[in-house]
Length: 150
Image (cartoon, rainbow, N blue to C red; front, side, top):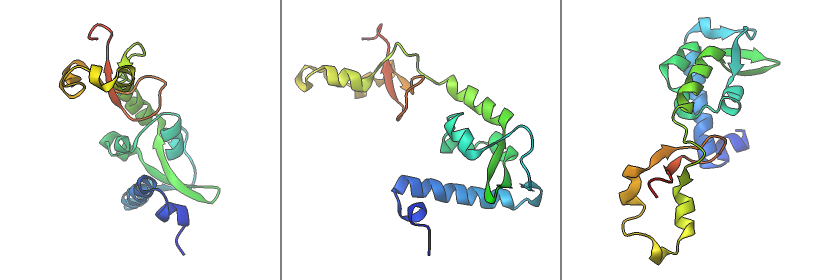
């Protein structure tokens, strides 16, 4: 009987679970990458996603794929990655973060009544915006505008 939440839960979670199952299969093809203990300087996939804020797309990078190993820890088998590689990807991602003083597109849309919005907003104004996530905020990346543009 299949695990209920793993395969019958929210569609995005099921897709993520299947992605990492295939990821583990690809790493397991190289028997040198299956270890019995956690080497110093390696972090788990869950630590990489929670503390280092890596996303699914980040695990596809060659830098991360090269350092992936499979380890059994207390009966649980999982993916582990070199902390140096994970930190490098995090620093690269942090460069794309939006400064906290910028205003999100959704905030602007909520500030006006629909009839008071400029014609073509927001689609025609995306060229003046910066796309990404603000530091310390969760959620999807969106467009942010500086006060100078507004």
